[in-house]
Image (cartoon, rainbow, N blue to C red; front, side, top):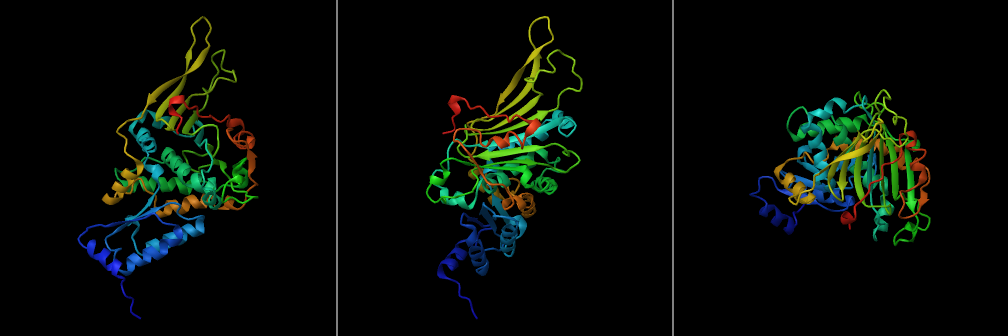
Length: 384
């Protein structure tokens, strides 16, 4: 049987004949990946070419493996760019730069000095007419498994062994492989009141619009350090923030050491709506007594020269630089962490819009490592 090449495919092939590395951008539903990739291969448009694939990359571990197999049938791994616009944001890239450009943090960046890490990606609005999409996704798939896990990887990866995107990818993959699979005890689900009234949403929907997880990384550096991740719709503010809580001094030398309102040192990365880095320290208050108060040393990191994430990422793909993209092994390792709780979980608890989600996330989940550090948004950075 002879397969004839459609005229449009021939014209596309002829147009791209002189291109050294043509790049195909697939912003299409995952159900069409196989058809399009096989079509590109059938007319030779996969040869020496690159392909950019939009997320979501699978719905679970099995579907991710299936998609990887389909694309790898036509393209080599170093020619596949699984795009996530979140990784192109300046503040996300700064996590990687800040860690490895400042040697003073390396000696304390481990389980000996860090008590816990909190990461929040909150939105103060609902699903904005995307109820049908959210019914097929939910907060765990839509944000935790990709965006939040990528932040964790940048915060916890070992130093790359050389300057190059291959070294970054290998270091991140080691983090995903060290993540302990979640259980239902590590996961709190919520749904804001009013979600079921959205178009495309089932009247008895149990899809989570809020997800909070307690993540463990079984590595020498991070054993015993809990990572608390949360995201949600219709929360109190729209903001993204990472807070690293350090342990208290080993000896209580001062009168206010037992004050429950005295927090340990913290390092805060504000990801959105504005970019900034803050270091919380305690300083002595004026007077005879050795008591103090907390102050934040604040460094704004915003710049009017920031590039849009897609501008940066698509340019990187055209140049073959995959440092800010996700590789096959990392995709599958991340899905392995959440795969069990996609189906084995408690019902979603209802929460009022404008709050910080279900109370259980502040009680059972985070417990003595709390409270949650709720981002505060200045009026001039409302995020809208």
